[in-house]
Length: 141
Image 1: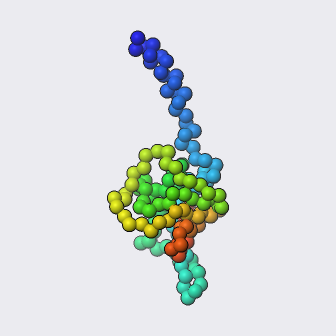
Image 2 (image 1 turned 120 degrees about the horizontal axis):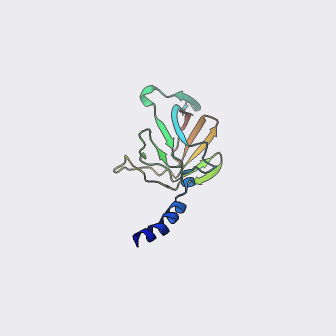
Image 3 (image 1 turned 90 degrees about the vertical axis):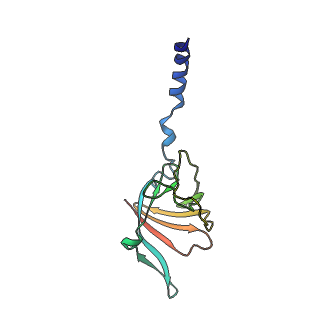
């Protein structure tokens, strides 16, 4: 009897497991991967300038296949946004796989989205909040 049940369940399970579930959408396909911060835009004497990131301030950001933002250790950092604007097109982050977080409790200033401008292997990140004074330049690792 169990063999008959297994014979019916196996095809259903195989059909239900689609490899495409973990493919990035076309909108973020080029964004997926590891990025290293190389510069931060600051304002000096009223002028915006790019300041190179030193080794002590070096940081990484990883965009997962579903848009979830991770650090270089694969954990979700504190205070990540709920959506992205990728080259002018909105994208809502919806986790499609489990997330490990390094955040136990934090008091975050709300950053509802990140505005991303990507050209080839360069990424400019502008946190989308009224308190966002800086932009960050990353290169693909």
